Length: 155
Image (cartoon, rainbow, N blue to C red; front, side):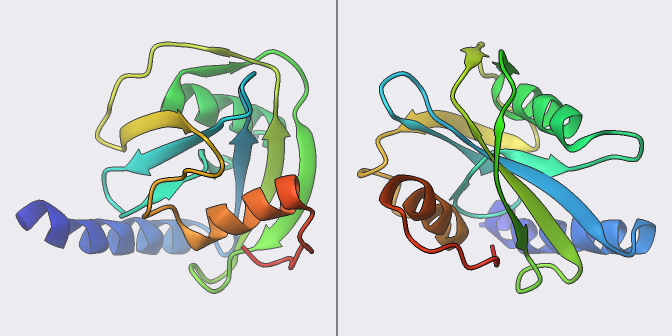
């Protein structure tokens, strides 16, 4: 119970920190697709639900460098080829001033995932059998990529 109560508090603290240190944030997320067509999802330790892996772009980093770093940090995934930039989205509804560059990754080397304080779990899932608590933004991106749904421009 105490851990569940701390997740919203931790998320708010992290967002306030980013807001204090940046006027606008830019992040990356990826739809990592394995050879069987399954999708990589991660579950954070500080927010509920399953999400596409990714995170913020740091000063001096390119989006590609940030994506490579985040995939390695969150799920032990090493990029083996240039990822495809699929779209650029506003995440204003969830976090004021936030924008996300969204990539599709098909060529990678999987490593051994180890849980951390930030990422509690990671795994590949059949796109038609996602965990019940997969985020709506994640579901929308999957529908855009696999089902040709119209891109809204909003995460």
